[in-house]
Image (tube, rainbow, N blue to C red; front, side, top):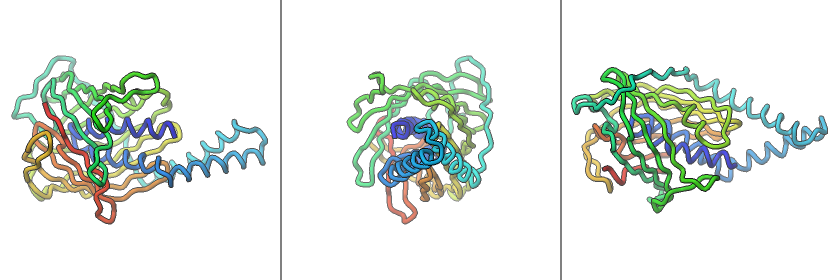
Length: 313
């Protein structure tokens, strides 16, 4: 289960980075919730049973021990992955190239994500009881390109519930650097490079379609569907967001301040390690800031997780 936990942590970076850059927060959140659910008892039992059965089958059929058991597990996972992919068609996305020159977007160019070099935003993940379970601190280290296409470089630090840095297996702080490219209001995140940064994870396959958020939103406006798929070893994650719609314009107050936001409702379907989740998300976006708050509901309408900004400097 080590890789599941690693991926869950890295997905926190994915969610919060995309939350600032585009409506991809919902996709990242859906995938992360799938991974988290996969780490829970039910999914652990499913994986353990599959492993046990694989070992038993290979011992009886081939008597080749662990090597054949691993092959059997891979075959089992391939079948699960093929089934998931059959219901989620996600085209590969080519990340646009940008000029490597400093660029400062003017206020008139601002859209619904952070746009200033040096901006530091801290986010808290809360459980259904409002207890903080983890934090992430994101810093924009550089912006390059031009008006037509520009790239935002991020440094994300993973923190515990009290805001103290988390460390990886090597004892070093969990800090990740990656880039988001924005062209025509569409956000592109290099998922493969992002996940390859996690020590020990190989064979990363990732693709997806980001969700477009225009510079100007209006209540009642429908937004395009979005989806993503990630495969790391035997860990498979998929998510699709549909029926996205702007349902309100309102002020939202968090520890980071009060922001005038557009409220977007999305239907979410995700899967990780064969565990499927259906639900909805409500996300509040502020212009020039990004996703200020996201509430995730299960299919019965119960809040199961909240992500909100607690610092914005």
